[in-house]
Length: 305
Figure 1 (cartoon, helix red, strand yellow):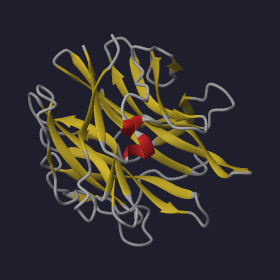
Figure 2 (cartoon, one colour):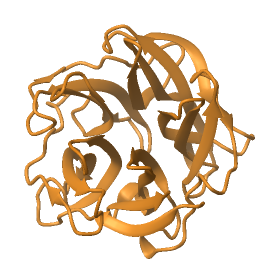
Figure 3 (cartoon, helix red, strand yellow):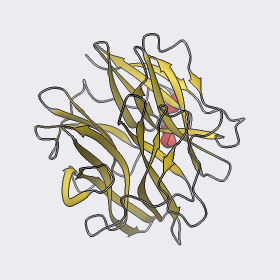
Figure 4 (tube, helix red, strand yellow):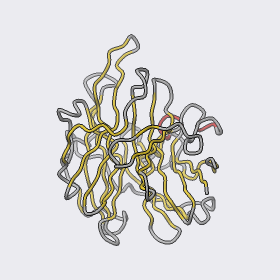
């Protein structure tokens, strides 16, 4: 069975100073029986991203959502790794009500579109109503394995070990059209979720020389295999890809029509689909995702049994 698209379920509130556009990188965690909290990043008039959330009842996903009016996370101070914007792309429940948010902070480079990104962390003791602790420095930054950036982390806590799949910046190509970024997905492990062991293990790689970007993975274990959905691009608009793995480290990409969400059914996704977030709820799978321009119009939802 293929995905059934339900359209946009959340649109940015353009009357909020911190959210005049976008609702990028939906990242969900279950609150109770039917209700899920979905974190996203919206941009202000200076293009700086802030993190907010909306709550949605997946027992009745089209009845409307409740959203936060003030941002949960602001950009950091000038000069900090997240001083020009912050995104949440991963969330882990530590205790019943305590969650850890894995975030991306970024700064512009000396020429456009060059940028630098690093991974930070924050914690909330009330499921994201407020932030109780936020690290002012990145917990993961550029390294010998990730020479230009690290971004888009997805983290799970499994058998008392934290596992991370993240976007690893490989370099920038100088082309007649300007600089072009290159990044794919690598894997890291940690005992505490704060200090990470990287060995340069590539989890999801390019399928051909035309492909240049693989972004924002998320991973589910189905009892037999690890499944991953991610964004990828060969220079045109982003698409959503799918891969499977036995060990959760090395993934094989598969072009399964039943798992892949394609663009084109609505105006907001006419050119691209990206940032898939898959959750399982009462025997169904739901996919939150973005459309054109990394979620300019908001967050969409698809479902399949």
